[in-house]
Amino acid sequence: RPPLPLGQHALFAAAAGRAAADPNVDAEADADARLDVPSAAEFASLVRTWELLKLDPAQAVRRLEVGVDFVIAVLRTRCAPSTVDRIARRVQLLSSAGPSLSGRAVAGLKVVPPHLRSCFMSQLHVLCRLRDETPTLGTSEQLTAYLSGPCGGLLEKLQAEWWMSSIDETATIRPQYSKKAMSAWLHADSQ
Image 1 (cartoon, rainbow, N blue to C red):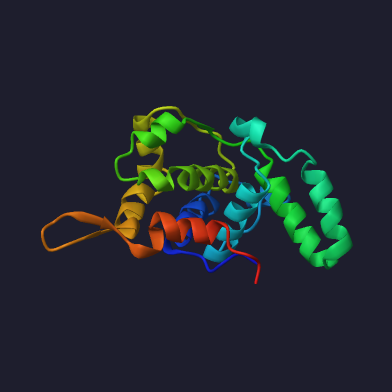
Image 2 (cartoon, rainbow, N blue to C red):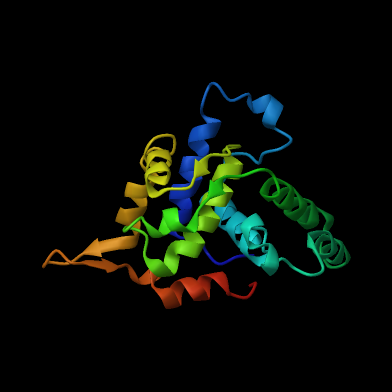
């Protein structure tokens, strides 16, 4: 079980739900390939699965040597069938086509703190897979347009979640999004 979800997970989950609420999306046809609109906890679990299983296609050199199928097989020997089935559904979703995402595009977004860029990219990969979208996000402009348009102002909402203003109008990262706190969240042991 991952640690408690953060506010950013709720914001991403809500953005994923925008696609599910779209009347142009055939929910019945996509029912087998997609999870239901996720809660913040489910979104956090998907991000953690993405990170722990090293599923980012752009990071092929970081892939697990044993492979995801081996991990699922080991889980079958140690976990309840319902748990394994839930994880297998997550892996299936996360293995589907996703965005073409550039690290330079993310680095160009001044509102994303440098220590959150990798996490932000993982969350974008999960978001696009939940939305069943494969956008090209190669520039900061494309990324901003995607997050502001189809995702309903997600970048602005994340900025408000991550940063707090002080009396002298300087922005300070919220404690729960500090480098140390985010590392602890990602590497927390199962409880």
